[in-house]
Length: 120
Image (tube, rainbow, N blue to C red):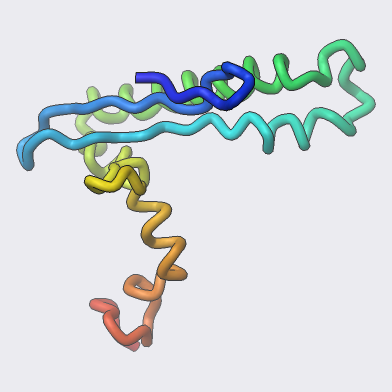
């Protein structure tokens, strides 16, 4: 599935995959706004290419290349699908693991935190 912003630009892809743990849902964003903020002031890039449309093309190309690299690692047996895509896994409310961990300031993972398995 595709997610769109108010201008009709695709901002994320979501998909489901059956895993040994059941069906997992993933959301892969393309943060076009951040790409635009990088290219817009860059005078080495032609003014005609410093647009939101070009930022979208760049963002989606980066996502495509990243996915291809991750799928090659999965195919080679270097990693599991869940290992690679875990930050993008969604809970039933649609929040990703990354969003949940960021909301909690990564406390469960940091040494010395109250619920840390790592301990200090």
